[in-house]
Amino acid sequence: MIQALEQRTYTHEEYLEFETVSEERHEYVNGEIRLMTGGTPDHNEIAINLATLLKSALRGKPYRIFGADQRLWIPNRNLYTYPDLMVVEKPLQFQTGRTDTVTNPCFIAEVLSKSTQDYDHGEKFSAYRTVESFREYLLIDQYQIHVEHYVKTAANQWLLSEYDDPNVTLSLSAFEAQIEIIALYENIEIDT
Image (cartoon, rainbow, N blue to C red; front, side, top):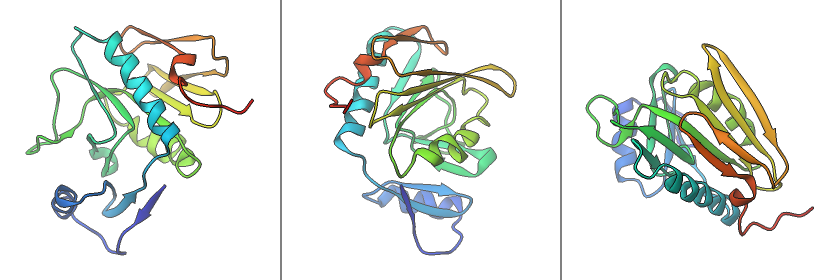
């Protein structure tokens, strides 16, 4: 998952300075800097599959799609993080004074790993829900065909749908798009 650096509290400025020159990616959580570990080939393949599907579905529409190298600032939780995939409606909104840190995703997807699944379901999803523009969350299991799809239905209300059937198509509501579950898992060998 994420490993903590030296045990001390860092300012936003120290983190951003450090992150700008670092060859690795780090999260910033309430003054703590945490090293983000790399993903598996399956993790990366699923993220690329989703990005490809969304890129095609959103062609010509007012959205930008970002992978795991795009930083997100969540001021209500004092958190800088790098979701596996984000869709941001244009115009992009940036953290004040920055041009490399977005603040307005409408859709976020995380590919689950054993080390991050609890964080992605819990603390991280809780932080994402404080972002006003955020309306849809997809959690994709890399070890078995299982997708959790959360859609914001009202203030403080989220609807969960789960998909285990590879032949199902799920409908995204933050923007009109259809995703075939089997297409998310293209080139992934799943033990059945």
